[in-house]
Image (cartoon, rainbow, N blue to C red):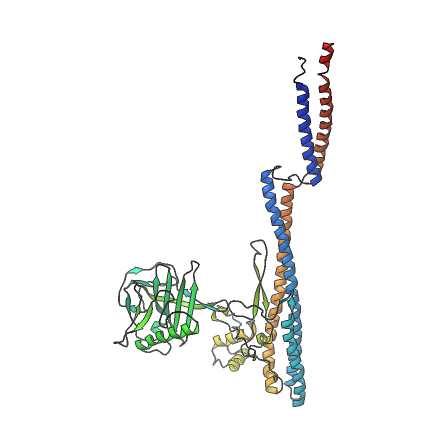
Amino acid sequence: MAMVVKNNMSAVNTLNTLNKNSSDMANSLKKVSSGMRVNGAGDDASAYSISERMRVKIRSLGQCEANTETGKSMLKTAERAVNEQVDITKRLKENAIKAANDTCTDEDRKIIQKETNHLLMQMNDISYETNYNGIQLLNGRTITEPYEPSFIPRVGTSTANRGGIQITESGTDPSTKHPPLVGKKVLAGNTSPLNFDYPDLPRSLHNQGFSSLCEACSQFASVLFDANTDEVLYANDKKPIGSMSEVFVIGIKNCRTPEDIGEAILNGLAKARAKYNVPKASNAIDSHHGIKFFKSSTNPAKYSLEANEQTQIIYNGVSGDVEFTGGVLPHQSLMIQGDTKASAETRIELPNTTLNALFPGSPLDNDWKTVPRQMDYPKEWPSDFVVEGSAEYEYYDKKYGCNGDIEQIRKEKYYDEVWPYPRKGASATASCVTTIQKATRFIDDLDQALKYLVNCATTLGAQCQRMEVMNENLVTSDESTQASESLIRDADMAKEMANFTKHNVLTQAAQSALSQANQGSSGVLNLLQ
């Protein structure tokens, strides 16, 4: 090998090895000191990205665990308060039974009434004073959405004209456009005469009707007939795209002629728009397109739909049902925020246990919509649910005047014993136990209140259990995510210590070798002497 002085390649090569060993030792030292294999995106870009997302998930799950814990604490606070109210109700029933006994005098009942009044006031105080972090829990601070009527189409109804309203123009294009309305599509002009001359009025028009459609915004406006009532109902079904379908249910119970039907529509539209605060003219059947219902000035039995400077599209033979959704019920709905799809925005129900909820016939009545609807009853009654001819059958028949109607008797029993909310008319007044008759009535009302309170307590307890399960699921998810993140990011300390020791030794060896390589150039000086 040549002896040179300008380029000492042995020293250069040794120096490069020294730098590499020093860099590897520094990386190992960083991993050992931090305990992490991935300290930044430069260590492992994909692993860094995945682990950072997992870290966000872990922190979110931790907060959600805290949310469920506080939610459970809030529910337990409410549950304990309701249990106190259940105990008070037991004492109230003892007082009512005592007052209903003939061994008590009127003076005794006055004393019992005083205790009863204080107990009732205490129940109300519990409802208004029970709070968690300033949130009132049992007084119905917030209420669920009110009952909203919604039109449900009879999907699959034949598009043939099998009744409904006869429209002067005829058409053959059955509509397949989106619900809510089904029927025969009729292209009409600005004015579409309608004919209500049917036999067997009003039954022949029951649950039938007609519609107009704006194809530009897909808004239906409809009139549907109900032969079982004289009332009017307005259903507004909002669509995701922003348009909506409007349905006016017109009661025609006492209509016997086509003119009666027409007048019922005119009066019903006006009444609905006033009652439900629906904008536009009193005879308009939609809110946006100027389609109105008119009576002929020359023929009292002739009626028509008229549109403002637009061609109407009429649907004949409309059929459907109006049902209620939502509900003004004596409870408030709050949200516990979770992180998983199964627990995100979990709704919990906090009951209203104030006196006007327990006794909805009291002067403080808020008109809770607690009466069962048809959909609330079982589709099929159990065979042993009130046996015809039994003592139970006779009791409910006599108590509620059902005239032997087994269906009605079963509904009354369901309302009394199964339906979780108190029966309308239950009351608690300042004289509820002052006479035997009032005390006897108050016993029944207390049974209704107790049924409701027990349902509230069990609902709160069940929701507490749900929070526990939800918390356990979140803890499991948290642990699993942390374990996954650890596999990606945490350093194997034994391995990294071994690497550090190896690189440390190699670095020291390279330093010694560099010193020896630098000594090689000094040999050239000996040749120059």
